[in-house]
Image (cartoon, rainbow, N blue to C red; front, side):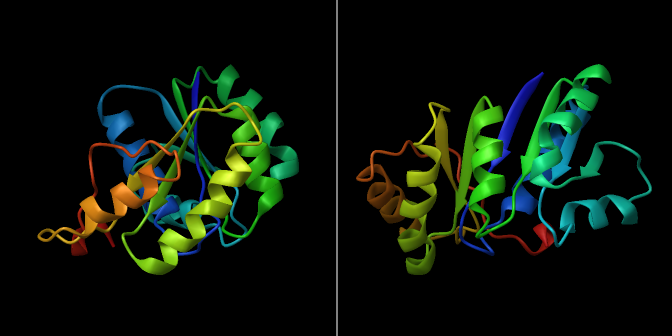
Length: 171
């Protein structure tokens, strides 16, 4: 089971949106996919409740139960598991980082997001989990994504070559 944690200490960076879109795309590609929602706001779980489709499965859990829920996903023969974490939750983010094979950090190309990314990188780097920053909510035109990616690269963090453009449909 491949496990990907979506982490950012900054609220509003697009963690849940990224996790859910990746889960739906994975499921559509024929993979048994699940999401574990570690955010007390339970946005991913509420999204799942509103859907008519039962997949991807979204489980809501506290960080202290993460390994148990991951074992349930493993027993259900889950191919891809996405861990959606809460902002400002070092314990949940750290636990997700420990148990994941990859960490994705969504980051909007805005100064407040850019300033906050260092804290997230510091937390992730306490483990040996590979990390990649995903530029999120990028304007369809202009240089902001390139400039932000260059600034992030100076922090010794790889930036995904695909940038997610800001679209009303994503909301």
